[in-house]
Amino acid sequence: MAGRTPFTNVDPATAAAARLQGADPHELDQTMEFMLRLIYTNLPDFPIYDCPRLPPPLALADDHSSAVDRLSTLPRELLRGIVSRLPVKDAARTAVLSSRWRPLWLSTPLLLHDAHLLPKGHRWPLTPANSPAITAAVSHILEAHPGPVHCVRLVCTNMSLYRPQLARWLQLLADKGVEDLVLVNRPWPRDLPLPAALFSIATLTRLYLGQWKLPDTAVLRGASFPHLRELGICCVFMKRGDVECLVARSPVLEILNILGCMEEMRLRIVSDSLRCVQISMSSIEHIQVVKAPLLERLVMYRSSPNAARGLYTKLRIADAPKLRVLGYLEPGQVLEIRDTVIMPGIRTSASTMLTSVKVLSFNVRFGVHSDVRKVPTFLRCFPNAERLHIMSKRCDQPSDNLALNFWEESGPIINVILRINTMSIREFRGDPGEVAFLEYFFRTARVVRTVVVAMANPKSTPFSTDEALSKVEKCSKNTACITLVLRNKGPAGGELWKFKDGADFSFHDPFSVAEVSRKQRSE
Image (cartoon, rainbow, N blue to C red; front, side):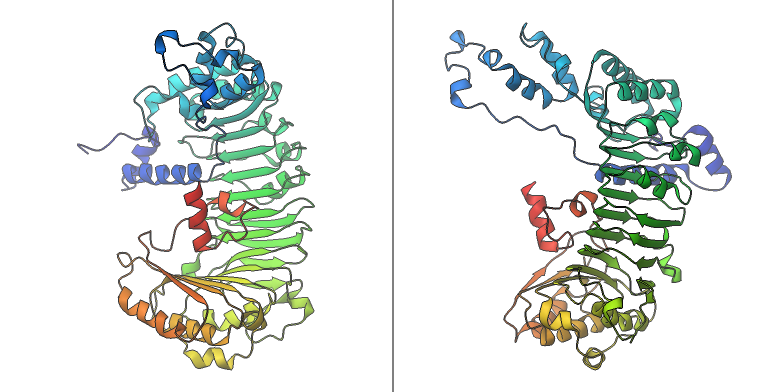
């Protein structure tokens, strides 16, 4: 073990238990750090940013010997705006600048991110040695600031070691009207129960929870979130029905995000307010959209129970009249629309179609016969889809590629012919099944304007990029649409899904390779 880095997440008891079982606790520690980083990546942005430079009339004079403190002469509301955009340490320190600055921090709604309280020189990943200083600082700030509390991020502390402090923090946050709260436990233990007091903070508009265990059902039934609009549940231990219980007690909830929950959930969606549901890297047996009149987006990313063993999420959509964005559908899964299970070759009718869907995404193994056979049938269920995005998945079994004649013999697909104006295929390797689909699409689609082919990374999936490119050029040579071929240096299977992309309603198409890249550059 010489030279190994100290644990940042695993406690000594867990490390000893892992060794007794023949496991390396350092690998367990690294796995937990990966999951925490995944949680951090999917947390909402913290509303702190660099202030723009002051315009010339407000800048200090060029002659520093005669410099005047012009900032302090600004209107009080503008000074409070400056303080509100500073990290909490800097915001509190403005009190020493002058008598005008002294009361500003205390009269400005509190923005607190405990990562800004790390001791000087300390960076991620965190170590247990950071916790005492951070915990003491959080306690001091929450006690000192009179409120109101706008936004709080508590993500750096192993909460199991500071349960009395956590209870006091939640009491203070409730008393001071916290609106936006992120609470992530630095494990171990991973299944630390959340205090019941959290579920009675009625002022919350956004709540994200990471690495916890939900309390008993009786506590959840007593929850009250009358103003909650966004809920994130990340790597949380919970029982069936817990999510539905929280949704039912959040009458204006618009966004529900679930990440890394592996208890083989069954999710039943009944909500008059939900607009976006995203489930990422979780184990979901069954999703039923029973009644969701405002639901616009449903995203399921890597959330089948065990796709390697042929176990996929069963999806039933009964009542979602405004559903516009849907993905990533797996042809291996059972899709049920209203009361009809969609099977290959089924005759579509008004009762088996969702006409509201405009943006559609599939995961397809083009080398698996049963996958490909379902694609034409699935496509017919969404006759008004205008954008189609396909993630081509690797086949870990003998290839069974279907040729061009399969697509031609499957019959006309209305949306391909008359609706789809944008199509993308990601993780493209130039396999025969992929090429057959591309050739069919280019021959058939009459209104398509843009096709994006994003190559797989040849370092993780060996193939000839030049050969794959020549196949794309051959398929598209007789078309007038714009065909973009993107080289890929990213991870196998594409970049991980980010909740903020899917929940950004100003972002027309969250599955678009080109638009996501453009959005990220603008940020």
